[in-house]
Image 1 (spheres, helix red, strand yellow):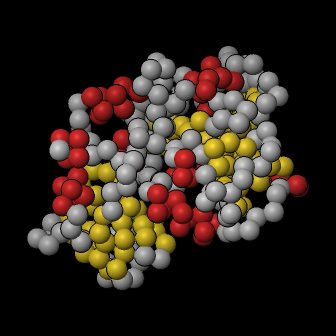
Image 2 (cartoon, one colour):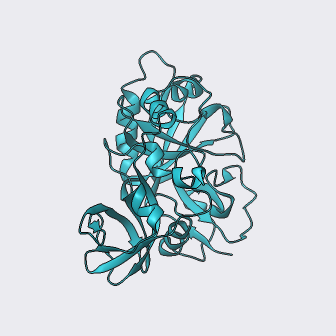
Length: 280
């Protein structure tokens, strides 16, 4: 089944004996759960709890390194941002993107028997992810566009294509349901606002899959309801599918929204928990 090489993904190496406690105090998920064959999805936030980057944490299996599967364009940012908090921690950070290839497989494709392969921790249907030496990466029989269509159908966000730095709150983007947040591990940067958002029910918008009838709107194109009021905005898309950040009332209504020259209709995936559903 399909396996795709993802050239827009990079790798940040976090090495040293303090690598786990160092990351544990900074990111949204429990880094101690990363192990050979098991990846953890996590986000780095601002102190105010707004998204900066997200990545998959892999244990390299050598007792020395964690590897972060991240947006390739964000790898230098991650090294810089994380480096600010290194202080006396015995940890070294570097952009190792040129040394690795990142692949994704789905649709029943067999996971390669490699140490740096793991199921995608967000959803079983998402498949698996693999970090391989760039010089000996497995052959791919699909392209990034195929993976893009698959993740859009599942409603999975794709970093900065769907989230806005210094603005997006994790619960708007499904990090709770998609296993991107630990509620039990203790403090991390941005934890206070994340917890307050959840327990006070402050989420008013959600990133949701949409079907597109007409020309695909550009990211950021506003979406309007029948009354002409703005309901949200388009994020990433491909063909007749996309993701849009919409107000909860527009999602619950399931109405078609005018967005550029197209109409978009929200399609709530089974994994997504909305207040209207919970109250039903």
